[in-house]
Length: 217
Image (tube, rainbow, N blue to C red; front, side, top):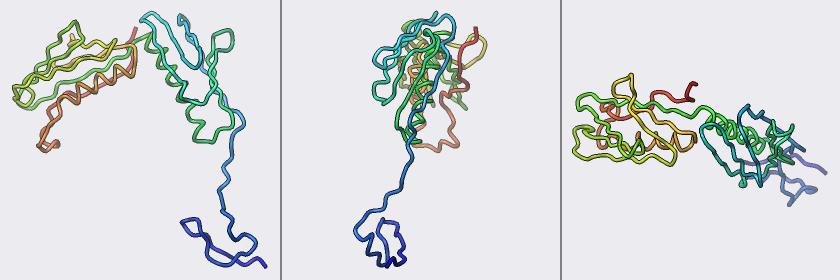
């Protein structure tokens, strides 16, 4: 009474199969009952977690991050010396957000302890790019890109400063405590000097990130 059948790519099947006719076949995905990740809180850092809003304070200021959009449980353990993230009944791909949350919180720790730094080089073949820092490090003005007269004004995001490198020619340094705001500020500078209507393999002028990381104490 059970005749062979073959599943097609659209979910239907070829061949007669009376006992299972009209039934849909679903792939069973295993769920994890509970999964937990934890990270230690470094010395000299104050942290508070309330309603999945994490606030971290250190010698370089205070940072806050909201994780309310994630279906996780976030709390302090071990007398406030450890941050734990927990998730119930999650599939394997959903479990990846636990490690992501821990990485984001580690970035907050590094930001208030050491600050983030993005070094950028002014690259040109013929027309020298001229960078001027104004507004107390809050704005950079770029002139003479590919010989253009237009002045490119790039404002840094809140809490981010830009300055000229002391030891290297044609280099600017973007620093800040928040890794998101610092990297986005560097991206705004990079995107302000894009070559248009030319072969970008030949015309390599621009402002490029040469290195990034935390500041050494």
